[in-house]
Length: 220
Figure 1 (cartoon, rainbow, N blue to C red):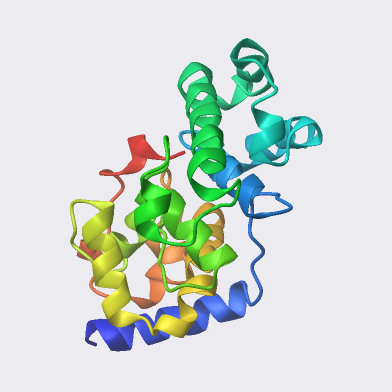
Figure 2: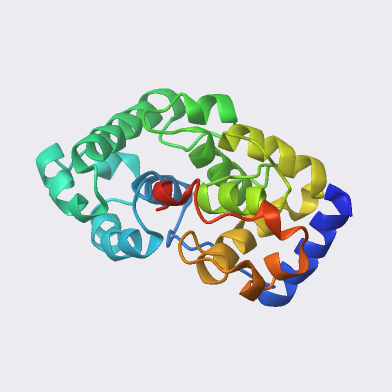
């Protein structure tokens, strides 16, 4: 079974288990999605969703966000971790949006990645979910599964992204990256993973490709 055949089999299983996966981070517009993804770095989506209602009630746009002092913002997001760094980035990117983009979230990778605190994965999430532009956001869940399933041997998420784009049809990327995240959290976990009990790993061979170590200590 070559990689494309394997990818097709995996995609069918994902469609069976998670046919309509929602975006796990709660948001109301492109700006709040951008902030939520930024907050999710080294933090669970569940934790972010506990924090953002209070934050977005005060500021769901860059103009209102800049009315919040950094100490107050830091306190609001403290439980997401890295609060000093994230609060500085949120205020800086909000200022950049007002000064350079009339308060709007830009719709190109170049402009998004030029914002403070915004990396390629964050930009990819915004591009595909806000602007319907082709992107395949790769987090540690997807990176781990791509290696386990023999779809990528990339040492970095950048290489994994490139490998996945080659084997999955572009029109499936938006749904697929969410499907893999949900599947990884439920059935193909970082720790205590048993390939024989995983609905995807159990149908892939050889089992010698599966491992229990590697990316586990980077998991959110």
